[in-house]
Amino acid sequence: MSKPFTPNRGEVKRCRWRMPALALAVALVLASCGGGDATDADLERLELAFANADVALGNEVFGDSCSVCHGSDGTGGVGAALGGVSERLTVGDHLSVVWSGRGSMPPFGGILTDAEIAAVVAYQRSTFAEDG
Image (tube, rainbow, N blue to C red; front, side):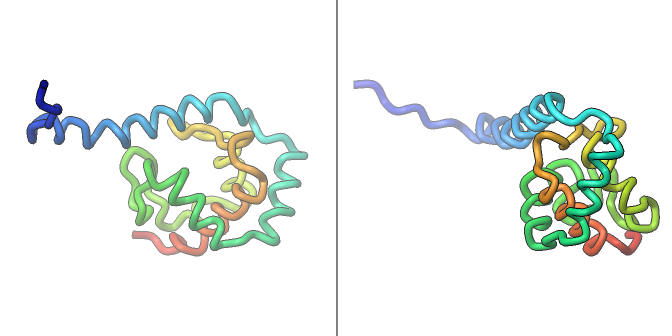
């Protein structure tokens, strides 16, 4: 009877980075399927959703969809640092960036619901309002 496979330390260390990298790759592939530039109608819907945004839901969405790139504390990494985001972007611009993506950030329109996008923007604006 053969002995079960037990990875050595080197194999375990190599695997630790693979899960976050795989999660990021899947998110990028899925995000490339949705979104596109936000239309005036998209922004109007998103701004209406923002008026009633659930910040607790935004915290969950941030943890699931944003923290991989922006860091759990919003200090950045692969994605931009979010400190002072409410000073840099209007609400409409912020909603548009999450919907359409920008630079290396994938679009989340069509991936997240309007309520989730509005909630994560409200969460980011309230949590990372201060620079640094």
